[in-house]
Image (cartoon, rainbow, N blue to C red):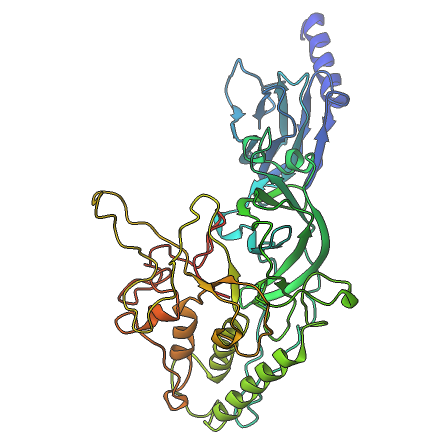
Length: 494
C-alpha cells in the first residue's frame, strides 16, 4: 500500500489536473494578463495528429511555451525532461505538431504581462503566415487612393464550349455568380515610417489587428480579376500624397498575408482610377481621363459611369474579333493541343483592355529620373527594361527602370484614340510585351495576330524584357514579373 503522503500528493495532482482549463479542439483561445490561469497550464485534447500554434499579441514580454504528450510529466517547463518540448516562435508565431493519443499539457512561463492566442487543430496550424504566392496584390494608386486585392480564395472553372454549339462568352461580359463562401479578410495599412512599423511587430493576426489602419475603405467587394480566381477587392481613400505604405491582409483573424509595400502618387497626379469593369476585369489602375463628373458622386470610374464613347468601340472590337474567330471550326478542329478558341478570346480581351485603357504612372520617389526623357524611337530595339550602364562606372549593376513614357496633352498622339482628352501631361506605363505574346500563342494562325519583337521594334510600344528574357525564356526577364511586393510596377500587365 502506498504511503499516506504519496496518496496526498497524487490526490493534489489529480485535483489540479481536473481543475486545469481544457483547450477545445479546432479552436482559437485568447489570453491576457487578466484571464491567464494560475498556474498557467492547459489540458490538451487527444488526437492522433495535434497541432498547437501560438501567437503573441503584445510586445512587452517574451513568454516560453512548453508541451508534453505524456502523463508522466505533470507540468512541462524549462527544466526539461522526457517528452517535454518547447514551442519555438519567430516573429511572434510558432507551432508544434505531434501525437497526443492520451492528450497532453501546455504550460507557459514568463507570461505575467503577455497577451497571446493558442490554436488547437487536428489539421493545419490555426495561426500561420500565408506563403508568398498568397500575398495581397496592389492594383495601383493615385495621390490619395489605392486599390488592393486579397490573395485568391476560390478558384474558378470556366465554361468550355463544345462542337457543334461552340458559344463564346459575350463581349459585354458580366461577373459570374459569387462563390458560396469567402474568408473573413481584414485589410491593415500603415505608413512605412510609423513607429513602431508594422513589419517590426509580431507578425500575427491579433497583433496587427490591434493597430489602427490608415485610410478609409470606401468600397469592399468580391471580384474575379483573372483566371487565378476570386479575391476580395478594396478601394481605399484618404491616404497622403507621395507617401510610402505597408499593407497586410489578415484571413479569419489568424492567418497573415504580407507585408506588401506601395507608394501613393504626388499631389499633382491627376489621372483618376478606373476599376470594376466586368468586361475588362484586370483593369484597376489610373487612366488618363478627365475627372469623373461631380453628378456621379464618385472620384473613380466604374462600369456605372465610364463614358460610352470608350466602352462601345471596345466591345465592338471584341465582338468583331470573336466573329472572325468563330469562322474557325472551334471545338471540332484543333489548332493546338494546349489552347482553344476561348483561350484566344480571353487573351485578346486582356490585351485589348490594356491597350484601350492606357495606364498612367509616375517616376518613383527614390528615383525621379527613372524613365526615358523622350518617347522611344519607332525603330527602338533591345530590352527597354535594362538601361545602358554608366560608362563612368562599368562595374555598377545595371539599373532596371519602369517602362514610363512622358505624354503631352495632344490627344491625337495618345495610344488609345477613344480616351477623352485629360487636359494635362502625364506619364504612360507601356503594356508588357508578354500581354501581346499571349494572344499570339493562344490564337489560330489564320487570325493574323502578330506582335513586334525585341530584335525589331517592340521597345517602341511595349515594355520589353521585364517578365520574359531576351530570347523569350519564360520568367527570366529583368524582374520576372510586371510588378513586385515592394510597390514597383514595371510595365502594364493588366
